[in-house]
Image 1 (cartoon, rainbow, N blue to C red):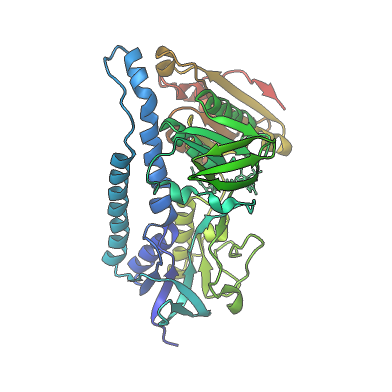
Image 2: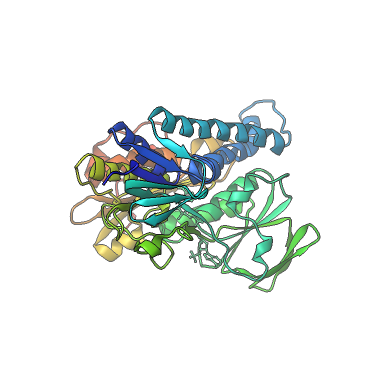
Length: 451
Ligand code: NDP
């Protein structure tokens, strides 16, 4: 049978664009449909604008620190309009880069929504139908509201980048990556931040000691964090939002931001109708090669709800092309993925938490917490954490957890050693780089505890 294309990709985010480009470079005839902006969540309303806001917010303490180092400098205010203008220009530039990548590689693009009509047919919003030998689903995900009475008066991380003015106060609901990162950002930009998290400690699933330190430092920096607390009900009051909390508190905020999780974009896509299996959370169910229950249809990235990170979506996209267009069946590797949470302080982590590792086997824990030189000299009391979780039997480093300025940069490099299966003795044999914070990762001689 003759198809219009070898590959039709739905979704122009990190995973979809990468797969489209690499398949086209292999000589495949490729098309891609995107209903919104090219670049997807990461580029347009996630990692990139978020990280730029982290940078912007970190300047707030720098004037004081510079003064402590002897500089005569004076703090001014943060101008949201100036920053937002530059941010929008940068996002426009990046979107053009993404469009350019597709165009230069001969990928035909359709700026409209697409859904499946059958196992080899895509229907565009204007009714046009296109056939393809393979279809790749890469529609990503979106923030979801928790279903609390009045939550339609809240906003999500998508809206933060479009605020007309910086609020004076905000309530952030949730304790995951997004809630905790935005608590730090907005606090740094001078907003009075309150955070409600329903559980006992934020960043559930990460190493207890590491998330404990992040939470403590966030509070030190002025975030009003309430654990074991959720919104009971809320309503609009003038241009503000009135909130009643589960602990009985009644307060008014300029905005309430929900960061209570994300859902895969699988609704009204014609998926179930053609036999694609959809999981409990709305995700596309795939096998180890990202293939769905319909053999011609594959899926990568957040729409599959495996590990929802941009670099993982990209790897899944590459593995899909290897498998389908290069005749080299390749499973994306989801083991030992290093990741950073851009809280303030930052957390970088790879491998098992102490809690998960000790469930698995006997371990040694090496951990040190100290005041870093640069901040300590400036009179700050903040602490950093360097931690290794080591197998007693194999001596392999099972987990590495860093809470420190620049922890994201550090964990990328430590991640290579951990991925290679480095032992504690390999770390010990490596000479320290002095004076740095990360040298502590190779100088911890005696276990803090065994378990
Ligand atoms: P998460 O799933 O990480 O966190 C959701 C948070 O909301 C949890 O604290 C959860 O609590 C809470 N929650 C869920 N439902 C409710 C409810 N009904 N009422 C109150 N609280 C609720 O989602 P995020 O939206 O923060 O992030 C989504 C994903 O995006 C992340 O998992 C990550 O993969 C990715 N991401 C990565 C970043 C990075 O690499 N730096 C940055 C941002 C996002 P509980 O713990 O009790 O379930």
